[in-house]
Length: 55
Image (cartoon, rainbow, N blue to C red):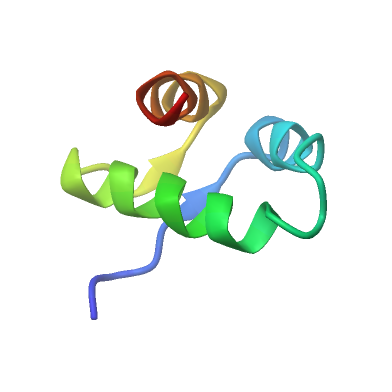
C-alpha cells in the first residue's frame, strides 16, 4: 500500500463539513488524488482541487 498522507488542520476542518456518512469515502478519494499527484500532504488547495475533480 502507498505511504500515508498527512492532512493540515485546515484541510481536516474542511473535511468535517462533509456529512459524516460519506466522509470516510471522501477522505480515501482525496488521499488517492494526492498520492497520484505525488503529494504527501493534503492542504486546503489540494482539498479544493480534489473536490473540483470529483464534483
